Image (cartoon, rainbow, N blue to C red; front, side):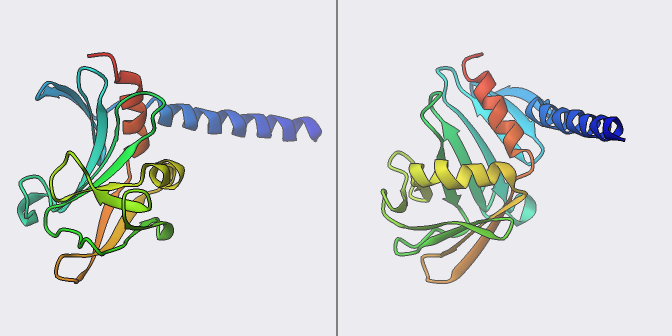
Length: 191
């Protein structure tokens, strides 16, 4: 009886390890070159690396005929300039911009992950080298709480107030994010 339990445990461990390896080594749905970048699509996420090592992954909300912007109503981007420096998380509001006084509540799978208040060191700020509608999340909060939760989650939501003070709730699929992040880390200097 003892050896049967060990056998079953070993089989389950191998199956589980196989699933982990398969997820980590997932092949992209599509790879192509555009605007000097190597790009790969992983379900709901687009990964891109430029010569020099800058890489990012992004997802869209509100694509297609209902989109206000050229690409989408909203975009979430996770980027990394160099190995070991951590990630930047940037939210782009196209359909509605975030009020400068608004807090941003970040949830993953309906669990509160971060409550970001305006201010570079405290939560979020307009991205210095981005557009007026690019909002950079605190890097320390992003790397300690947000990105790990995104990797493990299925859906992310951002709640905020727009320029008119109206509440907004924007959701993003997280399906394919982990594989996209793994891809940019392994393809960073392969261009």
